[in-house]
Image (cartoon, rainbow, N blue to C red):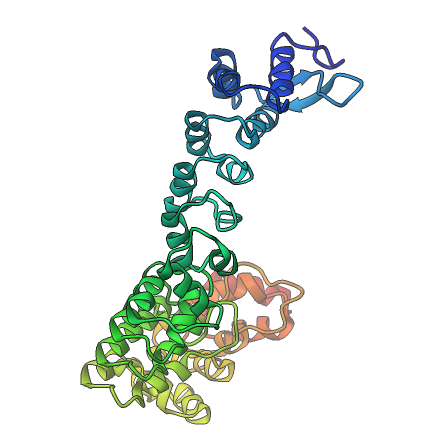
Length: 405
């Protein structure tokens, strides 16, 4: 059968009729459940991925229109989820099938269904706290997650503990230690940061925050907290090293996507009154990057007599002047120079690289010089530097000699 002219397929009419019944407010609950478990609908939903297109007489249009079968089935099940006559069994089925957000808009949603949505780790949250049928257990979950605290505070089913947590997160109440611990354990969004900035948060709750959500602003708040102790500082230090301490990645001291150097956090940890030898040992190998000013790091990076271990540490620096000096140092370890070498071809929009000092470095390995050639040999200056470098591979020297003749 030719579908190119909008021919109505046999399966389209039952689907259209099912959607019409699902949108009818007078349809009883047993009829709604029958639509959802109808073998025809179940089979179509199962096979939607194999043949996603179906032509049907879509309600509200004057002609047969092509539509994706899965989109039509989604509209059908969304209508079932929002229907006020949907029985609890149907609501449970739809919640498992991913229509929880639509169930929240159902004024007659069953309390146990709403509670299940709140307890699901990836379940929808928007609107749950304002649903009149949300039970006390649901509001407790939402309150300690920090979800819609205004709605939790106004809800008639909210417990005293939920109201305390919601008022605290709104800045209009005082929270006890147990409430702070529960928010630290379950909080989402800005809730963990609010707990970290509260001077009364106990040390064990602060440790929970390190394990759960160690984002940059939270780390700052934890380091500055008056209850921060040596175990907490060790945990924060291990987090910094684990997340940013990858060899030659130059990310140990810069937050991804920002210009906020993390040296400040390490300095704050080392200067903290609770900092003990075990905390200092975490940063023993990278102390020069924290303690030395940029001019001194730059001088050490350019000196061929600098200890190779220190040069390896300097390869993690974020200051481009330090890295530029390191790229031209003939005494730098091969792995450090390889970490500074460009990859791929030069972009016409790229304003700087370390190709120049690497090309002029007589200690640069041949494989690194080959990468420099592949990246930047189009520039006359870089090509002459490669030609003059004794470590440039012979085949590249021949190509460059013929080009620059």
